[in-house]
Every structure is written in C-alpha cells, then in structure tokens.
Length: 392
Image (cartoon, rainbow, N blue to C red; front, top):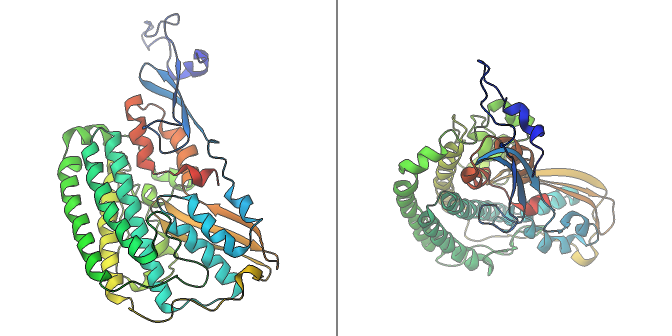
C-alpha cells in the first residue's frame, strides 16, 4: 500500500464550497506492477504504477532484467568481433547497429565504402525500418484489443523477412553490413519478388485502415491520450515519430544526410495533435513511405559492382586514435554510436544512443500520470521502445 499523503496534493479533500469530496479514511492508493513478463509491456521491463481506482497517479520505470552490457563487452573484443554482437541491441531492427558501428570504424580508419555497397546499405536500412514498423503496428493494435490487425501486419512482415533471407541467409539477425561495405548484393530475380512483397504490404495496410483507423472504439480510446506538448520534445530528448507527431520535423535522413538518402525523393511526415492516435497514424504513413523509398532504391541501385572495400587482416586490425559520432534514423528516432579508439586492436569506448532510454523512462513516467490503467499498454506501445537499448 502506497503512502496516500504523497499523492494527496493532486486530490484536495474539499471542493471550493467546502464540502467533502474525498473520504480520507476510505480513500486508498494501490501499487500495481505491469511487467516484466506481461502483454502490456514492450519487452523485459516493468512499470510500477500507483493507482487511485483505475487512474494512474504515479509511474516509475524499472529495468535491469536483461543484464546485457553490450558496450562493456565491446571494449574486450576486437573490432570485427563487435560486428555480430551489436545487432542484439535492437532485435526487431538490428541493421542500424551494424551500420552505425561500421560507419564509425570506417571514418576513424579512413575506409571508403564502394557506391554499390552504399545503395545496398540504404536498401537494408529501409527494409529493416519497414519490418520494425509492421511489428510495432501489430503490438499497438493488440494493446487496444484489435489483434487481427497484428496478424495481418506480422504476415507481411514475414514476407519481408523472406527477402532478407534471400540477401543474407538470415531472417532476424542479417549481419549483412560489416565494416567496409556489405556481404553481397541482391540475387537474380530479387527485384520482382520484392515488388510482390511491397504490393502485399500495401494490400494489408488497406485492411488495417478499415479495421483500426476507421474503428470508432480505437479513435475514442486514443484521441487525446498521451499528449506530448511540442516544448517537451527537446526538454525530454524526444525524437523520431514521437517528435514528428508533435509537429517537430526531426529526421536524421533529412537533417544529417547519410548513405544514398540525398538521392531519394521524400518529405518528412509530421502531425499536429501529438496523441496516441496521431503517433499511430504517422507510423502508418511511414510504412507507406518506406515502401516508396524501397521502390526508388531498387530502381536506382546497380545490380553489380564492387561492394566491399579492402581491409587489413581483421584479426589484427588496429585503428588510429580518434573519436567520432555517427547517427541514423531508425523507426524510433535518432540512433547513434559514439566510438573512441586508442590505436590498439580494441575499441577504447563505444556508447550507443538509442531513443528507447528517454522515451521509456522520462517520457513514459510523465505521460502515464492521469491515464486509465486500461490504456497504459497502448500508451507505452505508442512510444515504441526496446528495452535492450536501455540495458546496453
């Protein structure tokens, strides 16, 4: 039982005319844990909720269930040994870790990546963004009791994983972006099969529109829920779709162009209402944008050519002393690697900047207050967080 006096200032015992509106003797505050193993949580983490009835009065995020320590592990591994390790930091979207690690090492070592590899990396990152958004949309719909939409989105996500398997042989951990380039280009007939998959995604999204976005119950529960004022965006480190839904056009692909994004035609999608419905609708539009970008990439990327730079013996690779920060735009916002080298065969320090830390801790704890407990899962899903990014 929580200390009710701690939260009393939110609920005065008398209204302006002096009549009692709360019985101090019978009014109780209850502590409820949501997670770590619970369908209403986005991974291995917990929310400690203080409730008054079914209303959340206080929320505290608890992590520590994964104990992974990726950053410290990388200090004890050679550069190439870090490559298959970092993809575990964000399981539904591992390729951004591979790219950021590779790009920092390439910059510090002065390695020039071939043009065909840059196109291939851009394709991989957009495919990864698409699969992550599809997985997220299934979780968001399921949090509000509309699991059938998640069945559809996870089906077409599986089709996209087939395309990943064609390219790399892996479905979840592709490990296709090592330092120096990529492990290969697209196989014969890939473009036609990719177009079939993109058409399947578009068809599924039409069904999702009718089931989810045109659903009066979903609108009633999400419009106005979890409002993020624009002034909170910078103060709380909000980024990605969460920031864009508040009308702040943050997108690393446009603000700090990398790979082949400057050669692609797209606009930064923004919203104004900054609630759960707006964030969900914005990500729906992002899914269709990724479909369009993949088509643009497939039309422009070469089908052959050099795709891997010449590297020294990677088991004895020593990178000169230096430091750099490389960022990319993942589904959750700015994703970055700060890498420091000291001239040895091991990284001196690697720090991963994942959006989940600020979104799942500071932001979630703020937005959950005044929320109905039935909507906590949907609110958290709308922020799109991955616990391994926090326990990295």
